[in-house]
Length: 252
Ligand code: NAI
Image (cartoon, rainbow, N blue to C red; front, side, top):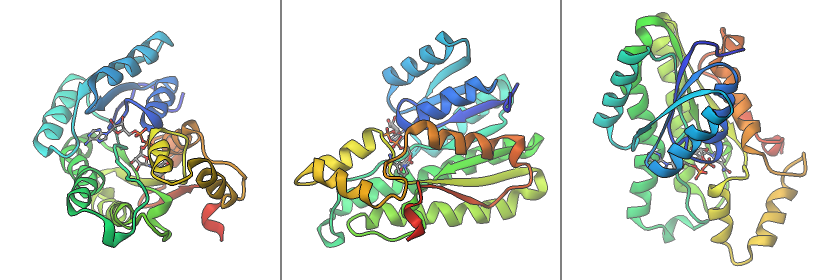
């Protein structure tokens, strides 16, 4: 098992990619600290893991709250020692031209997607540097390519990709690897929210799929596999990397 005995803290793990990652990490032998702002569904994710024979616990965490992030990390470090942090929590928004975007929405997206990742690295690095470890940030293909009507989201995800490189450069001598995964469109609630903001969600979905050389969008488990790889010793010489998992979308 690739994460045997490790403790992995995952943000936004109540649903979607975070939940799939929590399940995969538990299958690989990790104790998973499922965290999310949504308490009920977070606890359901823990039940799913333990029901399948894995080990997990739930802790409530809003990633935009840096003091709470530090408190959660310190508690996990005291209990078991932290080995891996997955900064997965993120929010999207319906497709919208930049000039039509409300500054309140801008701030909400930046606070969650960009500052949430900053908060996670800030909170976890002291613990990870103690005994080595790994951070995996969930960015997006929107952080490495441009596309219309998602500029604010792109701003945050591009920031996460380059932040990942800089933190990797800082933390490598302390045996901490820092990488990012850049998913293409993935079948989660976030995708549903994005499509429901279109005039015709079904044809919007067909247009998206047409842009993917593999002819389909990702399943959350396929992104989780990329996260597990970067978290595991199989990636022991990989740091500062942004692993694009996008069905070939960025080939064009
Ligand atoms: P999702 O909406 O299914 O799950 C996101 C989770 O994050 C939810 O459980 C939500 O409660 C939690 N969350 C939101 N704000 C939070 C906060 N402030 N603190 C703690 N938890 C919070 O979305 P999905 O698709 O699983 O997204 C996961 C990550 O993958 C995000 O960073 C997203 O930007 C990224 N991503 C998703 C893609 C997609 O097409 N679904 C494509 C590329 C990247």
